[in-house]
Length: 453
Ligand code: MN
Ligand code: MN
Image 1 (cartoon, rainbow, N blue to C red):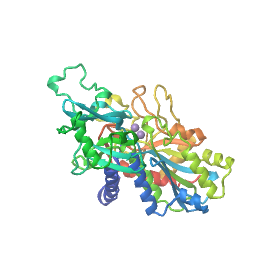
Image 2: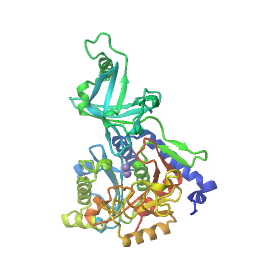
Image 3: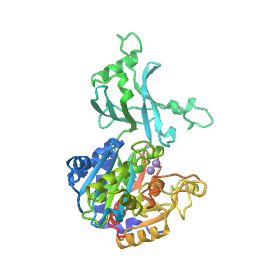
Image 4: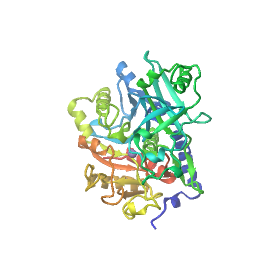
């Protein structure tokens, strides 16, 4: 057995781990959508003296070393930046995570009636095992935009709110070969079953619509809405020794939170530093708020402009000279399902931040394979900061695989490696992490932001 990181955090030092993880649990409990995470990041940024890039652009105010800015993209993608002492052209140290998580989304026309129920139709988002979302309390988080442009924020299913559920067939009547084989179209929420006796037709839908009317929301408004179905309830300590946290969306909000906290606490860095929180990673990083969009590049151009450093060549050089930690979670060895893993080369709980030199599947296909020169530099940086880390892969060769935003950042010709927290039951409604890995990952990101050329 290799060393267990808890040994480094015995006695008094455990308090630091608990304090940090207490804040993290609160963040995770309250922020279950991209928009909620962006709002949180902006509020933390403003509390810490960061200025809105849009406002700075309008005023034409110049930026200098030590200045702090943030930029928001469509309320679902955000970037925080601290200007370094060195010119930006010399490169940026970037920690990039994603803030979208697997879930069910409401359809644009979600309400229908069946057997005396008003039902709510969903379309799942990201790689889920569908059966895991049945028969448990679910909450709705999201936004509705009315035709007049007014916005209604939706949070229903937390605290004493009513919750929602996708029903499941009882074992007595479920004799199909694989009871776990659930169809996407069968992920329907029970909306209610008090009919409106006065309604001429669709009385069960009518009674739900009349409740929505009290919020000034119509059936047509679902077309201009983004409502996510997520597990109801808070992140909690797990295990009798409280060594772990079970919560919704560790992938990848655990890396988002640790990267954000580390950046907020880094004053006057040598090189410019960026914390990038993107959307749509779980469905291929596409769309205007995903990593494939030009938001990051355009924002860096604007920041360089306000620093008086912008020209096309300087921007290209800045991006090429940069280093990125593609901060995403990886699979921790599961003590029950060991055969899916290579025990010697995969990530374990309580061994610190996990570095995947490459990801991909079928012979590294689709992988960003990090440069050893860069990894050597990282090892120096982390060892100097006394950070514990593990060099890992995700599962046995040819067992499966996965991807992150790493290959997209690598297109700029910069150095990129995947680095994040090991997770158990990834993509399940409730995922599990080790507290000590969360804390060590935060320490690793702090050291990386301060990394010299
Ligand atoms: Mn992820
Ligand atoms: Mn994922």
